[in-house]
Length: 251
Ligand code: 13P
Image (cartoon, rainbow, N blue to C red; front, side):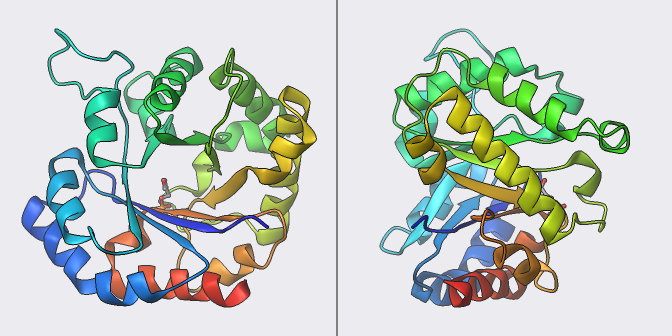
């Protein structure tokens, strides 16, 4: 049995004050929900204060990115060791990083390897763009991203995959549960090919893209979908909590 994961990717939202208020608004209820791994991914500057607020709870902390070098003259970057000092998880290869910061799968691969090396669990994001989807290239794009992002990585050690079709992110146009279930089943077969069936059966694969409290159940009910990476809706305490509770009720 795979424990579902609901992770909130706050992206570049919330000041420290706002982050603290958001966590305070949901932590008590959120930490009570069992059978779901609950992860908050605030901006870097809020990681330490959020960690302090959730320290004796079942809520986990994740970062939104890292750089792949341990330390040194890389002004503005955050190293894997720094992230591991505060977090258990880290989002890697989000499509916004690929799109706005020219992150290639080669860079993503280095980041995944660096994260695993310091014991962080990567949440590796993959997903096709609208034109690729319309051209029927979803499987081709996703399998290429998986192969290059995971190149030379022999042990996935708790790595989570988030399938986030780019056209569904922040658009209010979520994929359907059935469609997503099929793509995630494809990703699982792909992992089986790259590793083995045991790894494929154990790995958690999430959906991300306009998940809300209103559509979450349609994803969670699908057998291949092991949770969600939630953007906009994770910035509203009651809505995020609602998604987590619905996921727990499906278990
Ligand atoms: P939205 O839920 O805002 O569409 O964002 C999804 C996402 O990119 C999560 O990483």
